Image (tube, rainbow, N blue to C red; front, side, top):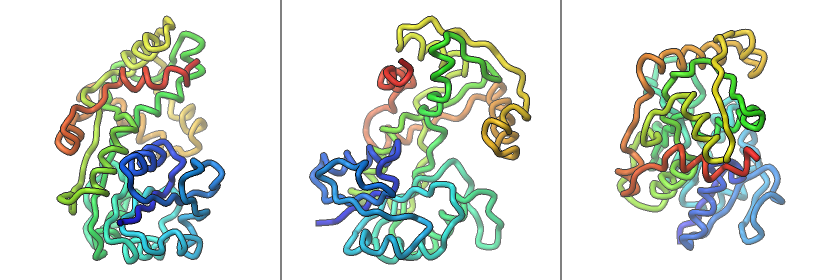
Length: 273
């Protein structure tokens, strides 16, 4: 029986990958920093993606790995270890372009992808558009009845984390996904303003949207990264003119439509309580 290792197993996506594999009867291990956060029936290993030595035991005898990289500097030795030990690697990436061998990466996702591509492992990249769960940043504002945010008409194709996880489980456990670069989105593009209204409907609140000016200083202070803030604001501005793209990846891989933003909001209504 193939042994599956889930990294980031207590995270938003990893937890669903873990439960999906377990529910299907697969032998699963979890790599986390704190094993006490795991279900009692899961084999947990305390480890850190910045430390190859801490991953040795978790990778012993593993056949496939769900890999997420938490935004720390890329550690080539860890990528090499994972791709050498596991026959199959499915990596949680984002909507990036392929990086040529001599190109300088503009994101750690490109660097990780290139290193995995150069390995002998079977690989699949799950390139997820921004998570619908990012809307949880509005929770306090939703409770106040007013969501204040830039670019009311920015139309996003946010994806439910369970869809990402189910695509991952399919790529991990079934054949035919080697070399896949799966851009995973929600089934439609919905504006910031409409997202706030849908969350209000799901939670039984009257929530209105108040458009803020796109002040880079405000968001640089919020996120602690001026370059990231500038990129986010530029992307949102572009989505007021051209809605974020929608793919049929979830339907092609899973045979059913992607979950809607409304479904996500209903699933998470308690998080806005």
